[in-house]
Amino acid sequence: MSNALIVHKVHLTKSLLSARAAQYVRMSTDRQQYSIQNQAAVIAAYAHAHNLTLVRTYKDEGESGLLLKNRIGLVQLLEDVQSNQADFGHLLVYDVSRWGRFQDVDESAHYEFICRRAGIQVSYCAEQFENDGSMLASIVKNIKRVMAAEYSRELSAKVYAGQCRFARLGYKPCGGAGYALKRELVDENMQTRRVMKKGERKYLLTDHIRIRPGDPMEIAVVKWIFKRFLEIKSETVIAWELNQKGLVSSTGMPWTRAAVGTVLRNESYIGNLIFNRKSQKLRQAAVRNPPEKWIRCEGCIEPIIDCEVFFRVRKIIEERRVDLSEEEMLVRLRKTLLKEGRLTPAIIDRTPGLPCSATCQTHFGNFRNLYRLLGYIPKRNYEFLDSRPVWSELRSKLVEQAATAIKAAGGRIDSGGWSNCIRVNGTACLSVRAARWTPGQKSTHAPHWSIEREACLPHGWIAAIRLAEHNKTILDYVLLPTDGKVKRTIRFSEAVRMRRGILRFKTVNGLVRAITRRLVGARATSQTRPAPTGRQKTVRSKTG
Image 1 (spheres, one colour):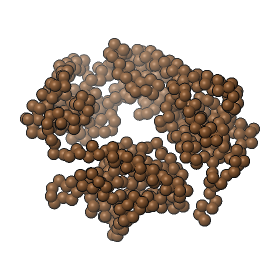
Image 2 (cartoon, helix red, strand yellow; image 1 turned 180 degrees about the horizontal axis):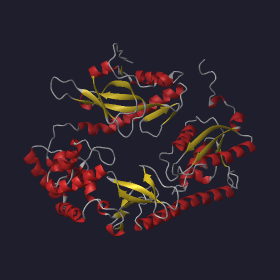
Image 3 (spheres, helix red, strand yellow; image 1 turned 90 degrees about the horizontal axis):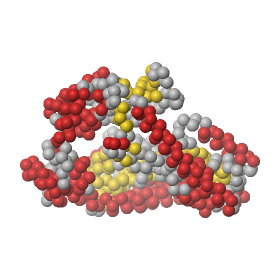
Image 4 (cartoon, one colour; image 1 turned 120 degrees about the vertical axis):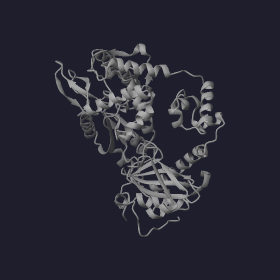
C-alpha cells in the first residue's frame, strides 16, 4: 500500500498524457542570470494558451550547448523518454537552439526524433512556426540548427581574436596566474579594483586582468627553486625537498617533477606574458601551437627572477634534452636495468640521459610493453591488466541487473553522469566496481582487496565484484557505504571486512536484492547514509 498514491505512466490514459507537459531549459554561462527564468516564463505562457499542465522540468544551468557531456538535464530527459519513464505527452522548449549549438546539425535533430518516436510532441514556444512535421517546419528547423552552429563558430573566432589582442597589450585573457603570482583586476584607467580569487571572472567589458607578484612566501620559494636547480640540476630532488618542508604547489597538491619544471620554464617570473601556447576551440581537444604562433608581451609583469638566472636554467634544460630514437631509448634503459637491478618509473625519472617515464609510455604504450621489449619481469604482477575487459563487461552487466530490479521495485534511475554508476530517485547513488585481489607481502600477511576510485566515486553505496586469487575468477560480492570522499583506493582484508561490517553475498541475485532494499522505498533516504566505519561488536555476513 505504500505505493498506492504513486502515479505510473502505464496507468495514465492518452487523454491525460496529452494534457501533461515537461519543459527543457538551458543557459550556456552563469552570467545569463535571468535566462532560465525568461525561458520558463515564455514556456509557461505557451502552456497556458494551449491548456497544458507543466509536470516536470529538465534544466542545464551554465552548460555549453556544444556537447552533450555534462548536460545532466538533457541526459536525464533522454533517459526518461527512452526508458518509457516519461509521464507527459508534450515537451516544451524555448527555441531550436536550446537543444544545443552542435557542430553536427543532425545531433539536435536526433534528440528531437527520440522524443517524437516515443509519442511525445515537441513544441518550440518562442519560434514563429508550428512544429507540425510539415515541409516548412522541417526546412526552418534545419536552417535554425545551421544558424546555431554557425553562431558558435563565429563567436569562437571573435573571442579568440579579442583574447590575442588583449594579450599583446599585456593583459591576461584567461587561465590561472601561476605559482607565486596573482590576478589583479584593473579598470580602463589601469586603476586597481581588487585581487581576483581562484575561479573568479571579470564581468565588465572595460575591466581587464593583469598579472602581479603574489604571496611573498611563495615568491621566496620560486627564488629558492631557481637557485637550487643551478646547484643540483634535478627537478625530482627539488620536488622531494619541497614536499619534505610541507609546501604545496599552485594546485594545492604535493610538488612533482612536472610542477617544478613548469615553474622553471615560466617566463612570467622575468616579466613576460606568453599566450596561445595551446588553443582549444569549440570544446574540441586542445592543440599545441608552434612557437611562431605564440603571442608574447615582454616587460608587462614585475619580475621575480633575474633574467640571467632564468636563461642559465633554460640553457641547462635545453642542453640535456636529447631527441632519441626508440632503439636508443631501449639501449639506455637496458643499461640502467643492468646497473640498478630493476626498473621503475621513479628510477627512469631520476636517471640522467633517460627520457622521462611519461615519454616512455607515449612511445611504448605502457610499461608492460616496455618491460616485454627489455626482457624484464618485474616482481609486481601485472596480469590483472589483461583481465580488465572481462571485469568491465561483468560490471556493466551488474549495473543492468541492478537497474532492472530497481525499476521493477518502482525506483527511478539515471546515470548521474558517471560510468558504471546509477542514481536512484535523484539522490542515492550505486557505484559498481571490481575488488582486485592482492597477495600479502609476506607469508604471514593475509591477502587484501583493492577498489579503485577511478574518475569519481559519488556518495552512496559501492557494489563490488570481489575477485579470487590471481584475479582470474569471482570469489563473491560485497556491498559497502561510501561518503564520496575516497581519495584513491579502498583496501580491506577479510578480517577488516568482517570488522567493518562490509556485507558479503555469494550470488549476484542476493546482492541485487540487498541493493534494491536499500535504495528503493520509503526509508531509502535514511538507509543510504554511509554507515560508520569504526569497530562494530556484531557483524552479520550476508550469503545471498
